[in-house]
Length: 200
Ligand SMILES: C[S@@+](CC[C@H](N)C(=O)[O-])C[C@H]1O[C@@H](n2cnc3c(N)ncnc32)[C@H](O)[C@@H]1O
Image 1 (cartoon, rainbow, N blue to C red):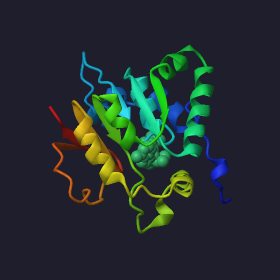
Image 2: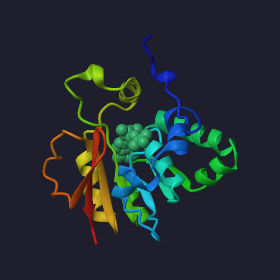
Image 3: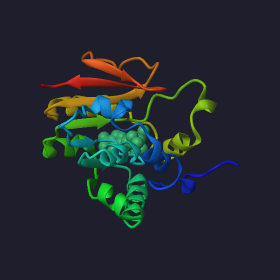
């Protein structure tokens, strides 16, 4: 059955996010590795492209303080509602949600005011040719937010603001962003890669 943007929900308790919280691989997963979790060191993170908050939730569940920035009003409302629901689920969830701070606005304006340690960027990715393979949920998000043609500008601002590192989440086989410095290293997941730009 075809779905409309009204069917999109932000759910941290059920589905894939809840499953990952119970059975995920903790700090061994590609994202925490890219962010720079080490024993004795948990970085604070600004997720400049919050979306449905999944990456931010994973990082907060591993102990990081995460500031989430979302500019699209619809996505921001979904996130706000999802965070509220999870806050009232149980104490385990409440503890994680207390580490997450949601901001509404454009990260290009907000990042310079935040003095971030690590910045995570996961813009809407360039459309793939085999669009049927793009997950339904991602298509719904695309219907709401469109593409992010200013992603390169956001990355440049993040590179200028981050004290420790910037992590760009990007499709495994996509070309690097035009005109951007070469990443310090890459961490690869199943279908995603993380380009890591070390600043210090
Ligand atoms: C691919 S989604 C991110 C998904 C997210 N990583 C997750 O785990 O759910 C990209 C989101 O970033 C938001 N976005 C893109 N550029 C932004 C910017 N400059 N400032 C704030 N939000 C931005 C879009 O509106 C969209 O909701």
